[in-house]
Image 1 (tube, rainbow, N blue to C red):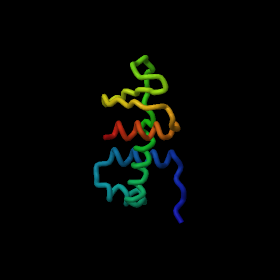
Image 2: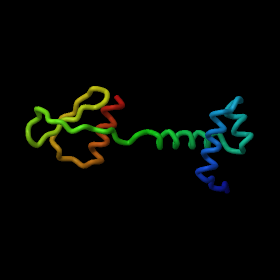
Image 3: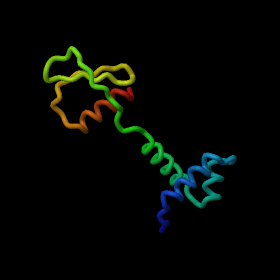
Image 4: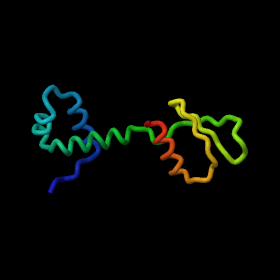
Length: 99
């Protein structure tokens, strides 16, 4: 059974991988880890570095009472009634910014 690596060990592995001169396979062999484990660590680090929510600025607008408008960084505008949960709003913003 594999031992659990500390955050510091994982960080050291990732820094070593990024500064390597050989191939991914060679690096994994030298470090004694599988290619799949390295890929997992890289994916996890990328997900943690990605911002979850965007900053928004409140401003008056021409929307009617009971609705809101949200202008995203990519220029898209969302207008809707505020009758859904925070998680649903976060998912809506994520989908609108990705596409």
